[in-house]
Structures are given as C-alpha cells and as structure tokens.
Length: 145
Image (cartoon, rainbow, N blue to C red; front, top):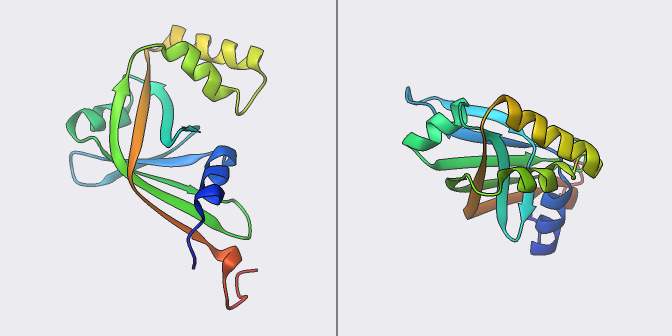
C-alpha cells in the first residue's frame, strides 16, 4: 500500500490518540505498551515515570520502535524507529501540554501534578531515524475500503 505523504503523516500523528511504545527486555523479548504521546516538530514525546519497565529497558538499550495505527477503516499506520533519550527538565509543564491533547488544560494540570506527586516523572523523546507508513485507504484493489 502507498505510504502517507509528509502532510498526511504529520496530520495523522497529531490526531492519533495512542502509540505502542516498544523497548527491548534483557531476555530478548519486546516490551510493548500503549502510551499517550505528542508529535512535535518531528519528534515523538512520551511521559512516564522513572521506575517503569520501559525506562529500565532504555537505560540498557535506547533503540525503540513506536507503532501508531488507526482504529478503523481506512487503516493507516506508522512505524517509527529511533533512539530514545530521557529528559528530566521541565517535565510537569511539558506533560501538561501533552495531556491537553486528551483533556482540558485544568484537568491536564491536575493529572500531571498528581502523577508527579506519586512517582518521579520523566519524558522520553524519540527522534525518528526511519519512518515507515501505510494507507490502506489508497488500496488500488478496493479490498480494504
């Protein structure tokens, strides 16, 4: 199937609600978890806590795969490959801007503050080194419409 154009890719990642964030476990298996995210200026941004499996994995191996796909037809999707880096600066304000994708600002502020009070927050930044996309809505056979 044809890939998404640059504009379609940007629009798709701005609107998609959840990404599957994949890291490498020490036993060779893949740890894949759904996460809220923000796509900003070509970078994927995720919020989490320092004591999660994904952070433990990233400290050993920063290579990640991120999958974002549509939840209904026409099926579209993006696989992003890259290296993750942890960011401990301005975590709360950045999380608020991320959470605003999902809720009003007042609620986003309460959520970011509440999560930070329970467990130390960290941001994960992924600059894509490779992006692969697909769009079954552009299917020339018409089978996926």
